[in-house]
Image 1: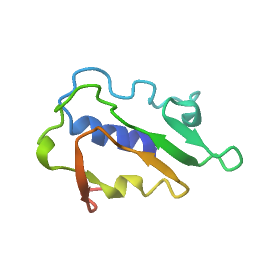
Image 2 (image 1 turned 180 degrees about the vertical axis):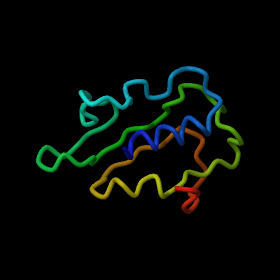
Image 3 (image 1 turned 120 degrees about the horizontal axis):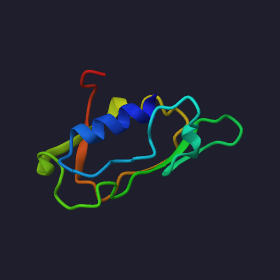
Length: 100
């Protein structure tokens, strides 16, 4: 569920009106390793890469974009993560655990 929590957090901190990461939905028949922008290790099945660059496709849409900080605890489920691309999303830094 780590990916869906990350999606919910990103969605709650944006004014973007279109679907954000639309293929990322909970479905028992859906394998998150097959979702767009996600790469898993072939052996372990753990997420190893997340490409989330410019996911909003708009500029300056993040609420309080001058001071938007990503909740670092959202990445805790991804213990095998090796590559994380969050560029071009208006993220200014990191904040500690906020209600997670």
